[in-house]
Image (cartoon, rainbow, N blue to C red; front, side, top):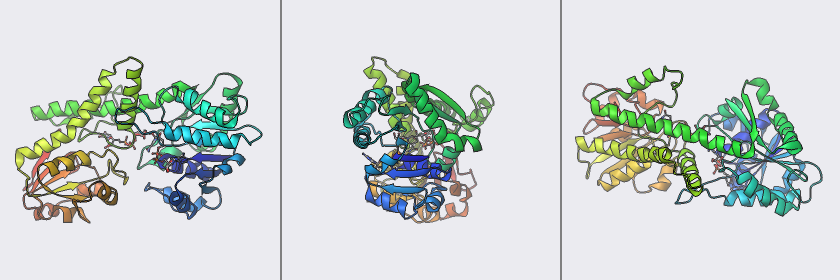
Length: 434
Ligand SMILES: NC(=O)C1=CN([C@@H]2O[C@H](COP(=O)(O)OP(=O)(O)OC[C@H]3O[C@@H](n4cnc5c(N)ncnc54)[C@H](O)[C@@H]3O)[C@@H](O)[C@H]2O)C=CC1
Ligand SMILES: O=C(O)[C@H]1O[C@H](OP(=O)(O)OP(=O)(O)OC[C@H]2O[C@@H](n3ccc(=O)[nH]c3=O)[C@H](O)[C@@H]2O)[C@H](O)[C@@H](O)[C@@H]1O
């Protein structure tokens, strides 16, 4: 099948590479020439385990990238994997979706035959019907359901395991319009996902457009709130000297709760939970509904880094002292630092007058752009050397193996926000919720 994907970011590149690997012919369109030439050179534009291999294998044959929207004319289906950030008030910014939809419409104006436009991006309910469809219609001069069809197919991949999640999803959600247009869209989408479903047993949910849009927000909001709830419970555990991880292990045995996403710590970050929870809160408020639980989930999340810093304050005054921050990525397995909990932690240390030294196995260069003036170490050992305290903000596996490295600290104080360091003799160790 001939498939185009607009946007070559985390979702677009992964989707394009995985669908190419599944046997389809892929065109990936992005405005960024550097990204496009990287893909055509067989190099993934982002750090994502397994992605480089797929891009290297299929670039030049089943996968090609371009800045030219004209190339989508020869494809049967176009996925929009464009950014949907939020503004300062939390409102979703649909500028890229509007621009991308218009560009697709301009090509469809000249195209004979069926074409399916699929919204892959995370968008608030009614966006597909009220923003994407009108933009494509206006630019193409065609009507949805007649000149082209439309679908909403949200993505649930996680950064760090994007390729795996895309190849082995729990579920595939297909949101379509009612009637014959919806049936046609479903047939096309089943053809797209047929090779993935042949190799892997995923649930397929067939639903409406705005239901599909809402399922994505409900998924992310539920997971973010689950972490905030375990963080809240963990904070209470800490007050009683109870280990929150022992409590989480026990409650996770109840199948209604489940064992996943119960790791309490310094909170959730990343490109999606913060923006998506903010966007659905804003959208709900615009509808006149006050989503108090979700707002509380955000408040707990904003408090966790301050609690980590507060614990540090109980052990030492860091003004003028070297303090190591271990882990800069928002989670392990990625170099993405967007909304990383390390950011408010570093800000708090700078406010306290500390000399901050950051270390991350892969995210240093990204954090250097955000904080150009702090020091960065090449290894955890180098960061710890001479430090008066260390704060752990990302649960990279390699931190578990740290041992003798703590001996080189000026003051062996470790405040762990991710439960990766083991207590040991000679170390003043404090966990955020244990
Ligand atoms: N990053 C993630 O883990 C996940 C993201 N999503 C959603 O998927 C969507 C895309 O997210 P990411 O891939 O993370 O974004 P990203 O920011 O990594 O990539 C977006 C790409 O679109 C390109 N672009 C912007 N405007 C364009 C235009 N008019 N035409 C062509 N290309 C254009 C940019 O140059 C960039 O390369 C968002 O709605 C996000 O919420 C959904 C699930 C997971
Ligand atoms: O919409 C999206 O972009 C994606 O957002 C999340 O994926 P991602 O942000 O890549 O990462 P997660 O593994 O969900 O972690 C998010 C944050 O929660 C934190 N977390 C996670 C789990 C946990 O138990 N505790 C915890 O603090 C992580 O450290 C990280 O900062 C969702 O898990 C994906 O399903 C979704 O597609």
